[in-house]
Structures are given as C-alpha cells and as structure tokens.
Image (cartoon, rainbow, N blue to C red; front, side, top):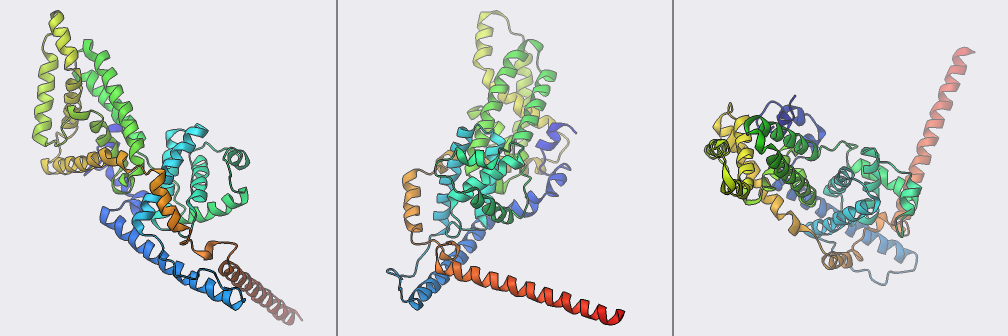
Length: 400
C-alpha cells in the first residue's frame, strides 16, 4: 500500500484499519469529551481526598494525637491539573535530551503521561514519580530499554527501583495495558516520500535538486511542529495521518493557504504546472525562479493533494480540509501551552495541602487500608485452605 494511502485517511478505506485500534476505541475524543472526562475525574478526586482527609483526622484524634490543621482540603481544579501536567510534560522533553532518547521515546512517554492523568489525578499520584515511570516504560515499548538501576542512577534524587516497579503496574493499569502508540512521525515520513515522488514525476528534471531540498526543509520543520504539538491535546483529538498532513502544510508558513478548498487546490495545481513548465532563460529568469521557489513548492504540495483526491466527492474533501484547518490552528497555538516554573509552583503550593493521604505510606489512612487488605487476603487464603481440606476429606471418605 502506498504511504499516501495511510496519510490521506479521512473518509478513505484506509481509515478503517486505524479505526480498529485501541487508540481510536479508548483514546480518540472530542474537545467536549476531554473536558467532561477531566471534570468528572477531578470531582471524584476531590471527593475522595476530602473523605480520606476526614478519616485521617478521625484516626489521629482516636490515637490522642489530633492534627494541627484539620481543615477540609479543597483540592485543585481540573484546569490546574492540566497546567501542572503540561509543566511535567516539558520535563519529559528535558529528560529525553539528557538521556539522548529519540523523538519516538519522547512522544510515547508524553502520551503515556497524558493518558494516565486523563483518568487519574495529581492529588493521588505524584507526577514526579509518574513521569519517571512513563519514561522508563516508553524505553521498553520503543525498544530502547536500559537497566532500571542504570536509568535511575543518572537521575538526581531518583526514587528507589522498587517504587518505580510498583508504579509501573499502576501506570499500566491507567493505560488499560494498551502500550502501542501510533504517532504522526511515520505517516509524515511517508507523506514526504510520496510528495517527493510526485514532484519528480510532474516537474522538470533541472528543478528537482532545488525543489527536493526545499521540500526536505519543510519536512524537517513539520517534524519539529509535530514534536512541539505533543503538549497539546492534538493526539487525543485527531488521527496521526491528519496531524502529519496538517503539520506539512503548516511548515510551509504562509506559502500554503490556511483556508484550502477543492477549487483552490485544483487552481493551485494548474498554476504550479504552468509556472514551472514555462521556459526559464537568462540571469533574470534564474533570479526570479529562486525568489519564487517557496511558492512553487507550496503549489506542488497543493497539486499533490488535489491529485490524490481527484476521484473523491467534493464534500468529503472539504470535510478533510476543514479538519486540517482546525489542526493547523491547534499546531500554531501549541508553543503557547508551555508552562513556566512559576505557574507550576503555584499549583504545587496548593497540592501541599491537597494530597490524598490514602496514597501516602506514612499516613494512618494508608496503614488502615493496607491492614484491611492484608486481613482480607489472609481470610481468603484461610477459606481456600479450608475448602481444599474439606475436598481432601471428602475424597478420603470416598476412597475408604
């Protein structure tokens, strides 16, 4: 199957393959669904925090050691959690640069982190621990695994290996044990190769070196745009192939219109063919060709899209172009989502009094819950042993 068949998937038969993946079933959401999920998870987290805090105060009073501050914690909002998580997503980028991990490991770690905190809250799980866990887990998934002791030895004030191993199970549960992540990088590379082939088959041979050089520069910039977009919700809302195509168009800056239409694509393709096919002679023509090179590549890109969609209904193509326009707007806004240390610090200050004691090994609630769990496990073992003993007695009766 040509790479472009995986790239231009909206309303196409190739889309069905992606729709069968867990990424679509569980992790492809609308903006409204994302906000609703975050709101519900946060509300549940605050409710459990307040219940656990009340129980902690009750247990402390029963021990004759009342808490100095027994005020009911208010927790943080879902927007504050989103901001705080984005700060730590930026830290994942820093860690990957430090370790020398490639962009795929980085992207997978960030997506893991996002998915975990879509259904969990920082009031329960410390993002510092979850960050390290997601990064270590991503090295396994992307075949870049390094021994955990070596991994942790390079991280200042790193937790114990046992802590990460324990957290790894909790993160995996939060991910629904779905570790395969389809990123836009592969369809983006396939798109670049297909555009290069289209360029070589439709443009004069003498123009190929300059045009391919410019196309390659656009591709590299598109890769950077995709990487920068990881901090946004684009991976939750759109297919990787759509993101790849939008990034390629956005990398062309103003040379590719932000409001493409079917008619515009057809006209751009015809204009590109006419402009590039025209004979170029003399120094003036050479200078003019160099000055309009960016526009020429943009026209070729539009011509490429028009060529691939020539047999599709106009309404379907318009639908995809509308999606691409939305994605491009999201991509342009991604850099503004980066969170500085001061903003994250304000949320961290609130979290000091808003951490759920049920997840703190030093708290009375944690010890109570652990004791209950151990007692239930012991009772279960006793029942199982009693059942086995009873079965043996019955068997002995039959044999005798």
